[in-house]
Picture 1 (tube, rainbow, N blue to C red):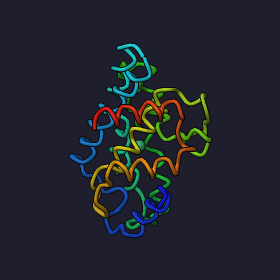
Picture 2: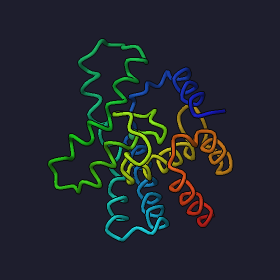
Picture 3: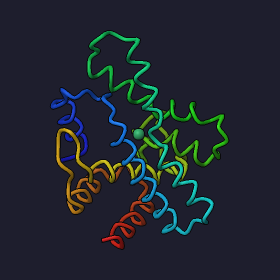
Length: 191
Ligand SMILES: [Fe+2]
């Protein structure tokens, strides 16, 4: 099973709407990503300042989702799911806009803005690829996917670590290999 089919499964089973936000789930997800992103940055040999920025970015990376409800409220009562997906894709830019005048560092802001960019250029919002994606965003990308797959969702149970790793390796084109290997060592050390 690949990530795309998991996403399709999510949409198909979704009588829960994509934009039904559960705040405690979102917060938990942020905390997991925050801790992982800090550890991966450490594993990559980055200094404490950078690792701390990663912890902040991890906690706040999806904050733009809170803005989405406002956009949806202005739409048709029951917009097509595909339309919702389009709005969901705005959340990284909305998060950036929300935080950019609040004294967060450039590292934190760019990590959040680009946390859905894929290494092969297939992500959003700007289809950046390779090392033109800021390192912080490449770290968040890996940690975010891991945290999502290894936690319960309304439409499925959490996958075990081994399955999560297999699913991520299937989608390795999305990730920076150096970051992914550091992340694997972190997970291995935590086991
Ligand atoms: Fe996100």
